[in-house]
Image 1 (cartoon, rainbow, N blue to C red):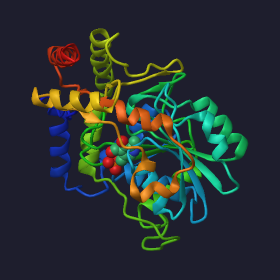
Image 2 (cartoon, rainbow, N blue to C red):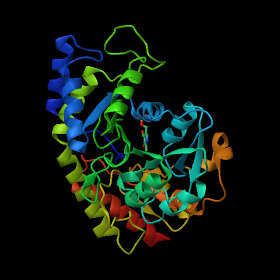
Image 3 (cartoon, rainbow, N blue to C red):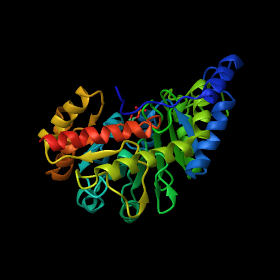
Length: 363
Ligand SMILES: Cc1ncc(COP(=O)(O)O)c(C=O)c1O
């Protein structure tokens, strides 16, 4: 089976994890944690950064540090992996769903202002499938209304927006290093920020609200959202190859573009951003054609994913809907993530394209 995504684990990864295990520093202290926090923040271009246990806890930690609480509203896109919506609910706040923009599949900056109320505190931007949201417009709206911006960059690690890495533009950037992401630590996540106060607050919240000055003294109720030194060892090794991973994603994207142009709706290209094609994705003409193509590819040994379901369409989240979501509904129904692993050979990507063309020709 050609997978949608699989991690590329090399000898360096094995060497560093082996070193971490042998050092005895197997929990959340150790040299790899310090090195990973320093180097990943440098890579993104923020002054501060901290490792956490996964991308979902990164989001919850960010919102907690921003003081998001019951009665507050947070604007989130209707097309996303569910974590950012759940993170708002973990804070007992209300997610307010916003439609997406067909030009980048991310939150529609032109529809945000209509959703702002006196209770709105923050906007969570989810940079979907390697793309970037319209950050200039979103930051301008946020500044004018005094709102925080949390960038969920789990799917767009390495994408640059007007030369800046995503995750360095909003108040806090959140990342996931789950096994299918551009780089992995097994499970794992990261928060980036340029705000020292927020960094300190997140560091304490990550460790049960304990002050670093006085052991076992808790200033507020926190969590255990720490990453282990073993995971960070994997992260340091992966980060050494991050530019190769990003470059390879581009090469794979180029093959899809070359072979599939004029046949299907291609993954959007940014004017303001340079995307990474975390998962190269296409849109078919309707839901039936999408599902039939997925079945056809599966029966030919090629795995794919349908897009996320629109959040408002799922029972636990229906009540957070505000009107209609024509764009997220349409794109969710027609979208497919194609195999995008950096380990794919050019010939395998070409094979996926030829099977898609064979399917289209047989219609
Ligand atoms: C956009 C987005 N946000 C958050 C997450 C959650 O990350 P994790 O699985 O590490 O909790 C993911 C995917 O895993 C994601 O795709």
